[in-house]
Image (cartoon, rainbow, N blue to C red; front, side, top):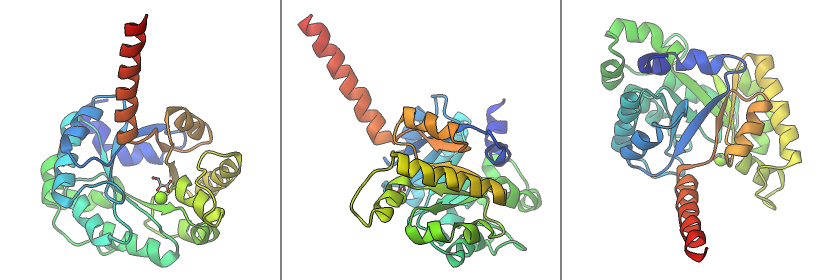
Length: 264
Ligand code: 3PY
Ligand code: MG
Protein backbone atom coordinates (compact mmCIF):
# COMPACT_ATOMS: atom_id res chain seq x y z
CA UNK A 1 0.00 0.00 0.00
CA UNK A 2 1.44 3.43 -0.91
CA UNK A 3 1.92 5.97 1.89
CA UNK A 4 -0.69 8.34 0.49
CA UNK A 5 -3.20 5.46 0.23
CA UNK A 6 -2.48 4.44 3.81
CA UNK A 7 -3.54 7.91 4.95
CA UNK A 8 -6.37 8.52 2.53
CA UNK A 9 -7.92 5.06 3.08
CA UNK A 10 -7.65 5.24 6.86
CA UNK A 11 -11.38 5.72 7.45
CA UNK A 12 -12.27 2.75 5.24
CA UNK A 13 -9.65 0.54 6.90
CA UNK A 14 -10.57 1.36 10.50
CA UNK A 15 -14.28 0.81 9.83
CA UNK A 16 -13.67 -2.74 8.54
CA UNK A 17 -14.46 -5.57 10.95
CA UNK A 18 -11.15 -7.26 11.82
CA UNK A 19 -9.18 -4.11 10.85
CA UNK A 20 -6.64 -4.90 13.58
CA UNK A 21 -4.91 -1.50 13.52
CA UNK A 22 -2.23 -0.60 16.07
CA UNK A 23 -1.52 3.09 16.69
CA UNK A 24 1.26 5.02 18.36
CA UNK A 25 0.17 7.38 21.16
CA UNK A 26 2.18 10.56 21.61
CA UNK A 27 1.91 13.14 24.37
CA UNK A 28 5.39 14.70 24.10
CA UNK A 29 4.62 17.80 22.02
CA UNK A 30 7.37 17.57 19.44
CA UNK A 31 6.57 16.80 15.79
CA UNK A 32 9.91 14.96 15.60
CA UNK A 33 8.44 12.30 17.87
CA UNK A 34 5.88 11.63 15.14
CA UNK A 35 8.68 11.48 12.59
CA UNK A 36 10.57 8.84 14.59
CA UNK A 37 7.71 6.66 15.86
CA UNK A 38 6.02 6.68 12.45
CA UNK A 39 9.04 4.76 11.07
CA UNK A 40 7.88 1.74 13.08
CA UNK A 41 5.09 -0.53 11.80
CA UNK A 42 2.28 1.51 13.37
CA UNK A 43 -0.87 1.89 11.29
CA UNK A 44 -1.55 5.38 12.68
CA UNK A 45 -0.40 7.93 15.24
CA UNK A 46 -2.53 9.57 17.94
CA UNK A 47 -1.54 12.98 19.32
CA UNK A 48 -2.89 13.27 22.87
CA UNK A 49 -3.97 16.85 23.52
CA UNK A 50 -6.00 15.90 26.62
CA UNK A 51 -3.22 14.70 28.90
CA UNK A 52 -0.27 15.33 26.54
CA UNK A 53 1.26 18.74 25.97
CA UNK A 54 0.47 19.51 22.31
CA UNK A 55 -0.84 22.93 21.33
CA UNK A 56 -2.50 23.73 18.01
CA UNK A 57 0.71 24.75 16.18
CA UNK A 58 2.75 21.76 17.34
CA UNK A 59 -0.15 19.41 16.57
CA UNK A 60 -0.45 20.83 13.01
CA UNK A 61 3.27 20.18 12.53
CA UNK A 62 2.89 16.70 14.03
CA UNK A 63 0.14 15.96 11.50
CA UNK A 64 2.48 17.12 8.72
CA UNK A 65 5.24 14.80 9.96
CA UNK A 66 2.74 11.94 9.86
CA UNK A 67 1.93 12.82 6.25
CA UNK A 68 5.66 12.85 5.43
CA UNK A 69 6.06 9.37 6.94
CA UNK A 70 2.87 8.09 5.27
CA UNK A 71 0.92 7.60 8.51
CA UNK A 72 -2.56 8.95 9.35
CA UNK A 73 -2.60 11.16 12.44
CA UNK A 74 -5.62 11.20 14.75
CA UNK A 75 -5.87 13.77 17.55
CA UNK A 76 -7.42 13.39 20.99
CA UNK A 77 -8.80 16.79 21.98
CA UNK A 78 -9.09 18.15 25.54
CA UNK A 79 -12.50 17.55 27.21
CA UNK A 80 -15.22 19.55 25.41
CA UNK A 81 -12.77 21.29 23.02
CA UNK A 82 -14.97 20.80 19.98
CA UNK A 83 -13.74 24.00 18.27
CA UNK A 84 -10.23 22.55 18.47
CA UNK A 85 -11.55 19.40 16.77
CA UNK A 86 -12.53 21.40 13.66
CA UNK A 87 -9.16 23.14 13.59
CA UNK A 88 -7.30 19.81 13.77
CA UNK A 89 -9.29 18.45 10.84
CA UNK A 90 -8.49 21.69 8.97
CA UNK A 91 -4.81 20.93 9.67
CA UNK A 92 -5.19 17.47 8.11
CA UNK A 93 -5.98 15.17 11.04
CA UNK A 94 -7.50 11.88 9.86
CA UNK A 95 -9.81 11.77 12.84
CA UNK A 96 -10.76 13.13 16.24
CA UNK A 97 -11.05 11.29 19.55
CA UNK A 98 -13.19 13.25 22.03
CA UNK A 99 -12.79 12.26 25.70
CA UNK A 100 -15.57 12.03 28.30
CA UNK A 101 -18.54 11.85 25.92
CA UNK A 102 -21.27 11.15 28.46
CA UNK A 103 -24.50 11.81 26.63
CA UNK A 104 -26.22 12.09 23.28
CA UNK A 105 -25.80 15.89 23.56
CA UNK A 106 -22.01 15.52 23.96
CA UNK A 107 -21.83 13.16 20.96
CA UNK A 108 -23.96 15.54 18.88
CA UNK A 109 -21.66 18.45 19.76
CA UNK A 110 -18.71 16.41 18.49
CA UNK A 111 -20.49 15.58 15.24
CA UNK A 112 -21.61 19.19 14.78
CA UNK A 113 -18.00 20.40 14.93
CA UNK A 114 -16.47 17.65 12.80
CA UNK A 115 -18.91 16.95 9.94
CA UNK A 116 -20.04 19.29 7.18
CA UNK A 117 -23.78 19.76 6.49
CA UNK A 118 -26.15 18.04 6.27
CA UNK A 119 -24.66 15.83 9.02
CA UNK A 120 -23.09 18.59 11.13
CA UNK A 121 -22.03 22.24 11.03
CA UNK A 122 -18.28 22.06 10.47
CA UNK A 123 -17.08 25.46 9.26
CA UNK A 124 -15.10 25.76 6.03
CA UNK A 125 -11.31 26.37 6.03
CA UNK A 126 -9.31 23.13 5.52
CA UNK A 127 -6.30 24.85 3.94
CA UNK A 128 -3.62 22.48 5.23
CA UNK A 129 -5.84 19.41 4.79
CA UNK A 130 -6.25 20.31 1.10
CA UNK A 131 -2.51 20.95 0.73
CA UNK A 132 -1.72 17.56 2.28
CA UNK A 133 -4.29 15.59 0.30
CA UNK A 134 -4.02 17.45 -2.99
CA UNK A 135 -7.82 17.71 -3.11
CA UNK A 136 -9.62 20.72 -4.55
CA UNK A 137 -12.13 22.54 -2.34
CA UNK A 138 -15.17 20.86 -3.93
CA UNK A 139 -13.53 17.42 -3.77
CA UNK A 140 -12.52 17.91 -0.13
CA UNK A 141 -16.06 19.02 0.75
CA UNK A 142 -17.56 16.03 -1.08
CA UNK A 143 -15.37 13.45 0.72
CA UNK A 144 -14.40 14.87 4.14
CA UNK A 145 -17.37 13.50 6.10
CA UNK A 146 -16.51 9.98 4.92
CA UNK A 147 -12.72 10.24 4.98
CA UNK A 148 -12.28 11.67 8.47
CA UNK A 149 -13.55 9.88 11.56
CA UNK A 150 -15.27 11.21 14.69
CA UNK A 151 -14.74 9.03 17.72
CA UNK A 152 -16.44 9.41 21.12
CA UNK A 153 -14.72 8.18 24.27
CA UNK A 154 -16.82 6.05 26.60
CA UNK A 155 -15.06 6.11 29.96
CA UNK A 156 -17.57 6.96 32.69
CA UNK A 157 -20.44 5.16 34.37
CA UNK A 158 -23.05 7.43 32.76
CA UNK A 159 -21.50 6.96 29.33
CA UNK A 160 -21.57 3.19 29.79
CA UNK A 161 -25.25 3.38 30.73
CA UNK A 162 -25.97 5.65 27.74
CA UNK A 163 -23.79 3.66 25.31
CA UNK A 164 -26.64 2.52 23.06
CA UNK A 165 -28.05 6.04 22.71
CA UNK A 166 -24.58 7.50 22.07
CA UNK A 167 -23.88 4.80 19.46
CA UNK A 168 -27.10 5.74 17.67
CA UNK A 169 -25.94 9.33 17.00
CA UNK A 170 -25.75 9.92 13.27
CA UNK A 171 -22.34 11.07 12.07
CA UNK A 172 -20.46 9.42 14.93
CA UNK A 173 -18.12 6.87 13.33
CA UNK A 174 -16.74 4.97 16.29
CA UNK A 175 -16.09 4.86 20.00
CA UNK A 176 -12.87 4.69 21.97
CA UNK A 177 -12.94 3.08 25.39
CA UNK A 178 -10.77 4.59 28.14
CA UNK A 179 -10.22 1.61 30.47
CA UNK A 180 -8.34 3.66 33.08
CA UNK A 181 -11.09 6.22 33.63
CA UNK A 182 -13.75 3.55 33.30
CA UNK A 183 -12.10 1.39 35.98
CA UNK A 184 -11.89 4.41 38.31
CA UNK A 185 -15.54 5.29 37.62
CA UNK A 186 -16.87 1.75 38.06
CA UNK A 187 -15.01 1.34 41.37
CA UNK A 188 -16.22 4.76 42.62
CA UNK A 189 -12.61 5.97 42.73
CA UNK A 190 -11.26 2.96 44.60
CA UNK A 191 -9.11 1.44 41.85
CA UNK A 192 -7.07 2.18 38.77
CA UNK A 193 -7.38 -1.27 37.18
CA UNK A 194 -7.67 -1.10 33.39
CA UNK A 195 -6.47 -4.65 32.68
CA UNK A 196 -8.67 -6.92 34.80
CA UNK A 197 -11.18 -9.67 34.04
CA UNK A 198 -13.99 -7.36 35.25
CA UNK A 199 -12.91 -4.75 32.75
CA UNK A 200 -12.65 -7.39 30.00
CA UNK A 201 -16.34 -8.21 30.47
CA UNK A 202 -17.24 -4.51 30.02
CA UNK A 203 -14.96 -4.20 26.99
CA UNK A 204 -16.47 -7.28 25.31
CA UNK A 205 -19.96 -5.91 25.94
CA UNK A 206 -19.01 -2.58 24.33
CA UNK A 207 -17.42 -4.26 21.28
CA UNK A 208 -20.72 -6.13 20.80
CA UNK A 209 -22.77 -2.93 21.13
CA UNK A 210 -20.50 -1.19 18.58
CA UNK A 211 -21.01 -4.06 16.12
CA UNK A 212 -24.79 -3.91 16.67
CA UNK A 213 -24.81 -0.20 15.79
CA UNK A 214 -22.35 -0.44 12.88
CA UNK A 215 -19.68 1.69 14.60
CA UNK A 216 -16.04 0.76 15.01
CA UNK A 217 -14.45 0.06 18.39
CA UNK A 218 -11.13 1.48 19.63
CA UNK A 219 -9.38 1.15 22.98
CA UNK A 220 -6.28 2.12 24.92
CA UNK A 221 -3.95 -0.80 25.67
CA UNK A 222 -1.36 -0.35 28.40
CA UNK A 223 1.34 -2.24 26.51
CA UNK A 224 1.95 -4.52 23.53
CA UNK A 225 0.68 -7.71 25.17
CA UNK A 226 -2.51 -5.99 26.29
CA UNK A 227 -2.95 -4.54 22.79
CA UNK A 228 -2.78 -8.08 21.39
CA UNK A 229 -5.50 -9.26 23.79
CA UNK A 230 -7.68 -6.29 22.85
CA UNK A 231 -7.30 -7.03 19.14
CA UNK A 232 -8.39 -10.62 19.87
CA UNK A 233 -11.52 -9.21 21.59
CA UNK A 234 -12.43 -7.60 18.27
CA UNK A 235 -11.31 -3.99 18.71
CA UNK A 236 -10.48 -2.46 15.32
CA UNK A 237 -7.98 0.16 16.56
CA UNK A 238 -5.79 -0.27 19.63
CA UNK A 239 -2.99 1.54 21.40
CA UNK A 240 0.04 -0.46 22.54
CA UNK A 241 1.25 1.93 25.27
CA UNK A 242 2.24 5.58 25.29
CA UNK A 243 5.37 7.35 24.01
CA UNK A 244 6.62 8.27 27.48
CA UNK A 245 6.45 4.69 28.68
CA UNK A 246 8.03 3.28 25.47
CA UNK A 247 10.86 5.83 25.72
CA UNK A 248 11.58 5.00 29.34
CA UNK A 249 11.27 1.24 28.77
CA UNK A 250 13.83 1.49 25.92
CA UNK A 251 16.20 3.47 28.14
CA UNK A 252 15.74 1.12 31.11
CA UNK A 253 16.42 -1.90 28.92
CA UNK A 254 19.63 -0.33 27.47
CA UNK A 255 20.91 0.49 30.98
CA UNK A 256 20.06 -2.99 32.24
CA UNK A 257 21.85 -4.59 29.25
CA UNK A 258 24.95 -2.45 29.82
CA UNK A 259 25.08 -3.28 33.56
CA UNK A 260 24.53 -6.97 32.89
CA UNK A 261 27.41 -7.15 30.38
CA UNK A 262 29.63 -5.03 32.68
CA UNK A 263 29.10 -7.51 35.52
CA UNK A 264 29.59 -10.62 33.36
C1 3PY B 1 -8.37 6.03 29.72
O1 3PY B 1 -7.98 4.84 29.80
O2 3PY B 1 -9.10 6.57 30.53
C2 3PY B 1 -7.91 6.84 28.61
O3 3PY B 1 -8.36 7.94 28.44
C3 3PY B 1 -6.83 6.30 27.72
O4 3PY B 1 -5.71 7.12 27.85
MG1 MG C 1 -9.48 8.67 29.99
